[in-house]
Length: 517
Image (tube, rainbow, N blue to C red; front, side):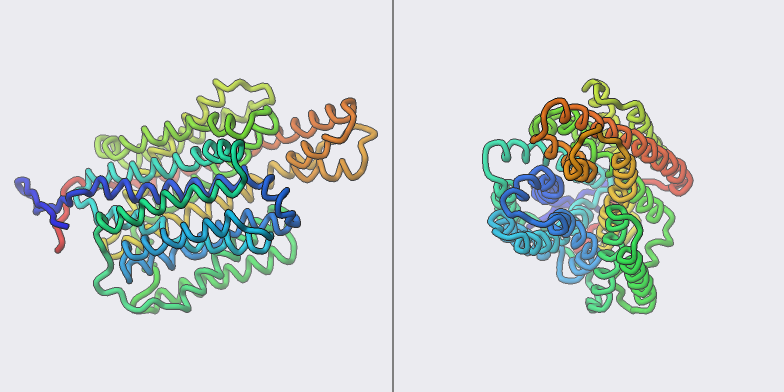
């Protein structure tokens, strides 16, 4: 592919690759797909349960192993892309993602489904850091790159909202495997167009890929995330404690090893840059405050307000609309004002939106919910786009894959922490509700497990018992959501204050970079 150079007075020549915007469309396809796949399984879970008959523990693994593997391998895969080439890793990952999606769709046993989800996580871990790193090398003009990052972030946000809509439509018309088969045509386009349009980029002096570091990173992240989820689901116990200690020891060993290696898997010196560290911390805490709410809001719309899956998915679209619009203008706004003001105000907007949900009730109308979701989307679009731009511009291009992987790891860890910590609040409040007198013991036990369990349990009961039991369960669930929303609001507002100080003086690049050949 040939490229053109333009020079403006007082600047170095900048390389403008023809076809770069079409190439970007290929990259955002991959991002959209991974984001959709992360959310669509929740809707399909009841159908998978009915067909494959997994145990409760197996069902948890089906839901969690994808995020476990992605969290554990992101740093390793980002570093591998820096070494063997980000385009090569992206295309290999896309082929693998498509192939393993077929295995997911036609899984016939719970064990096969768990394995398929784990392999999908391996493939997914190659896609996210590769896409953001390739943007760093496709767009040498910082203003163009800010817009490209905004589009990338907007599609990632849109994917989480589009997932329930697409999944709801497919599940109402086809069998549950269809939610995985939609990956195939998208991946086919990605591979064919990406092969022709994407430029290859990698670290010219990468050093060896340290397998010990890879294992330490995988063991550390998976153990920590598992321990958090185990403690949230079953309370603090020996398994969660031992696994958590193992994870912390592995991560400490990983960090110490990186500081001694001549070519580390992850250059820990990146964290000396205040802007980089501040942006990563802001991402982690923002997702922590948001993820628990998003996780339970879908259940609220369906199990409390009685919406169908497709209708519930449509109801969540304002968040995607807000994120897309804000992401497209975030770079321009950050240059006109400042990075810290855009990020801090975006986080504060999310915090205030979550605070509004502390008055949530079963009869809350959609205008309020829609306004809250729109405000969350706008705040997230501004914040995530600018922090992603800060992270990319804080490091040399040779380390773009590793830096992108750190950003994505913060996202995955924040999601795990949010669902675990805020989820434990909802679950703790929910399980304390009082069942009506005369409720059978087995029905009471099932109803106290989850709101979904309560909805299933009351189906065989007479109306005079079923209606008050379900009403009590729904009220307890909403009480838990209100408290969790308050906790999430506190986290977001505290993060907004921290970002104001940590990102002080941070600016987005405004000139052009020297073109490399």
